[in-house]
Image 1 (cartoon, one colour):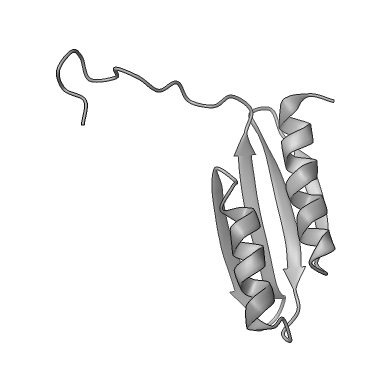
Image 2: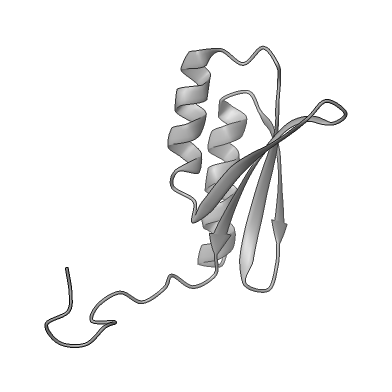
Length: 92
């Protein structure tokens, strides 16, 4: 299993373990994970959910009176390079 797929599946499995129904979609440069969030999700569970999605490259929450609440997370295929991106002596 490629690293991108494994990482996305891991996040989805951890969200599922917290009682959320998840779905994963693979795209050319990233994978998306979505989970429907029930109205009755306890505060303790929210903390755990946020700990999981914080490991993604991006995450958010879509809320609508028509469709409810959908938590989403995205993981990139390639991790951006770090290091000396501004030249010698300019790192902070």
